[in-house]
Image (tube, rainbow, N blue to C red; front, top):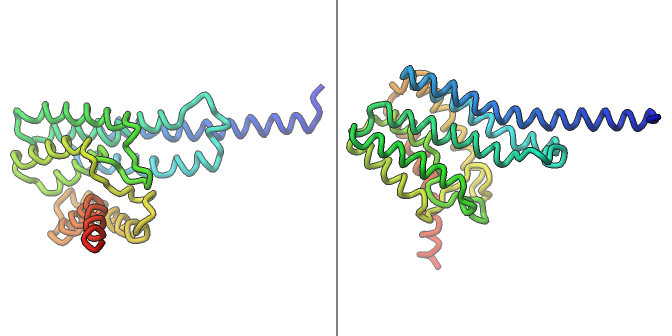
Length: 244
């Protein structure tokens, strides 16, 4: 017969395992959110689509710390949180934005399906690349942030030929060894980076609330922050090389 202490320990273990598995369910909810975003995209409710993708970003930001706090890897060893996270990230960061870019009419008609296919193929390959992160937590190559790329295409409303060219360049940069900072994990200038990301998030919400009809200063600020994220590492390295 089980002793009271053993029953309590077993109950605690079951509760802990259930809590750990709930984190996987939370992560998987990102895929459900992606489906809602896709439905909005099909209806051409672009601001709503980006709003739902923003909700998916919040889920993606929270699930990792919660998983570590609840020791999910130890308590649920049969379920790979890493694989699950990559699956959800692919549909939220790549697949839904690829549909939006392809179906929105922003690209040249003949180029749109080819570029859309290029986005999903290179995005899938990027997520499978074990070298996607450098030892100091920079992304290697364009980090398949097609949700952000799509947002800027909708914001800037460039001529189709130029939008098509920019998408083609980003596809090519996926496997070029440029370094792009991870907004949270890169230690250098983390305070500045997080502050700018906070400003960026507020400006994005304003932009979506006004359905992309925002004043020039908002657009300029959003573009400046994007340039910082993409180019700051290259600029710092160039300055250090010049002063060495």
